[in-house]
Image 1 (tube, rainbow, N blue to C red):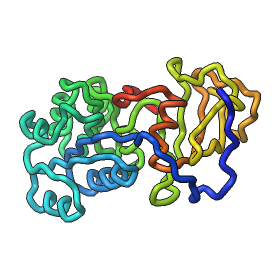
Image 2: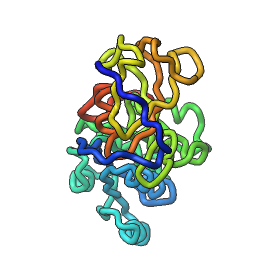
Image 3: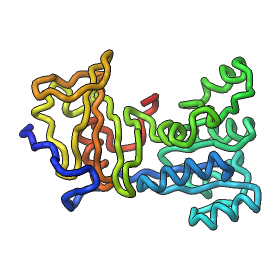
Length: 250
């Protein structure tokens, strides 16, 4: 791979470029505070979001926020199919009702859809263990907030760190055995023109300024700033995943 110089300008300035957009589809069950905040975070990152809500007032609030809303019971397969769970990359069951959340995740699992289950902090450890094995990830939104729910839904080896501007995001990628760049050095890493490598960390070490001759190996982490329209290219280059979000923590 031939190296490109890291983009030297401020992170909010990018050279226009035709790219394949990294575009994912999510179903969010629950239009309460947690559900809507997570839906907004995903939409602001350029993804498609469908909200499922049985409460008429909450459903209307989501519509007012310009979301596509399916009004109905999120624990019913028919409702989730109407929301497109069979074509979604991930489902976030984010209502305040644990049983509804778990059943929605079971339905989504049937359609090979990544599942994220909300559990409130007042549930005991044995309740957590009972439900954790049936889903891809469990979150405590009161403790972690919407960005944690967003990262759980994205899954795989990608972790959103911050939205720097309306169309710019700071993302941490983890090298896997399937990564196209595994075994290459940082100097050989070729990123899209409107993206920049900011930090690098070996599997068991803290993040630091990247050094050109360091080899990229399994578990290494790269922090990259990029425009939303370049994230798909960056993802393909670094992680090598082009389909659904991979199962597993970021």
